[in-house]
Length: 378
Ligand code: GMT
Image 1: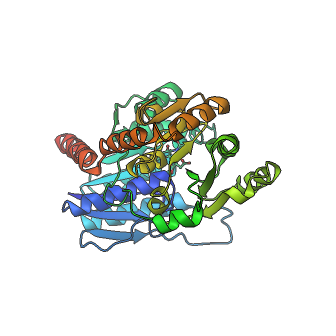
Image 2: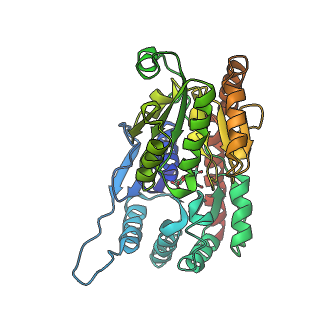
Image 3: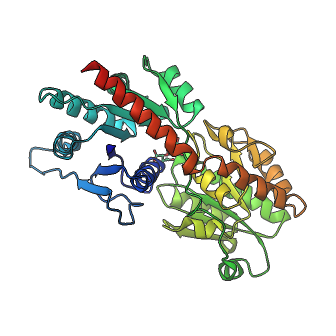
């Protein structure tokens, strides 16, 4: 198939999923065309089947806000026509689904019926999409998509709860490349961080309020009182200054390392004993899946789709959002050397259920179904 993928090119979960999907499809022999405003962060290898088309937004003194969505629609029209794409797959509804709708209408006037598939990732529904500034457009463009997928049952349910959606939403969960995300021998790194064999706790996020990074710090601070441990924080974002302040107030700075945005997260996860994800909202929790693939158990909240991934009492524990005491209790249980090896093995076994090799055929079958349905209409 010739597939167009539209996504955010950043480190965010939706962009990562879209890019890894495109890479996996290219390895299967499909021609994959990324259409974004810059090179996707994970589009880091050459493959003859991978193509990248940059969306350029001209500036003009009249524009207080550059009309990215229009430039994106125009680029989609151009690439669908020139590359003879079979399907457009847009990740994250805002503004990609409405830009695709516009492209589809333009292409119709040229006698081309391009099937559009929208994948909902989370905040496009649970946070930003619900805002009255966007809701009518989000509802319309989801209903106008030829196929819609969501990354968890929870997100599917929330979408129906919040929006008058008439379309069938197919759940295709996120996936993991187990070749990249696997526990590696990084003993020198572990020795440098925890010279006295302290336990290593890790949190990865974009440091936005939905991630509740303060809870991460509170959990760590109380765990550290019982078990000698260190905390590694990967990522960056608006809450970081507040988090650094909290670490100072709790007097735990020597045991907390801010590593910033990292490309090779798997190297940090390879030395970790426990992953913390106390999020307020989380449609799937890709960062937790990455940790589990590196044999790291997860202490998480019960937000959104996390309980579909992190099996309570098996791959870690799930607590109610904000229940820090319960998360501390569970973290101490998992970190106990009697329990830790079992949780690590269970985390890996669960991650294997989300192997890209298992999930990719679901996307391919869905593309074929939607393309066939559209062909039948013409
Ligand atoms: O977590 C974020 O804030 C980034 C966001 C995104 O869209 O880039 O992630 C969402 O999509 C990921 C990939 O499908 C999911 O694994 C995350 O759970 C989801 N985040 C939220 O729902 C908050």
